[in-house]
Length: 147
Image (cartoon, rainbow, N blue to C red):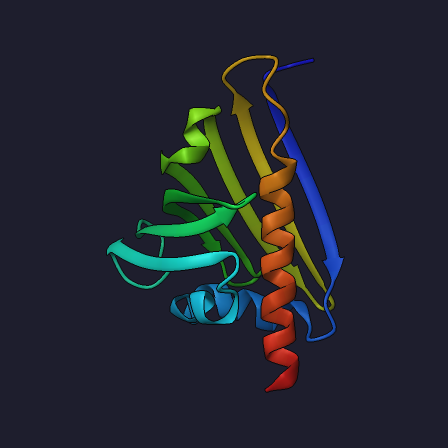
């Protein structure tokens, strides 16, 4: 088993994938209000709301523990409705040398891809983190459907 890996999960969203992308791209600061059980705080440290090169951080809950992650926005593709975040600081880097999350959305689908490199062989694949991203997407979908 190698140290580098990739996890991909797609889910159908009734509200459509494009509104999910738009939420992460334009309305990111609302996410702690929509999914407070997962996200406690979102902050922009450098740049503007989700623009390439912006540095953002999230305080979140993972398995009952408070966690922190700081990311740089590496890429945004408005045509493919995708955003790429690369982790540059935080709890996840205790287990992984590198960790990148990619959101891509199309018609009725939202796909999360996590590319990572484990520090050692015995570290598990980041299934918990992938699950959090899927749960967060479900919370945003519920919010969009009721508005």
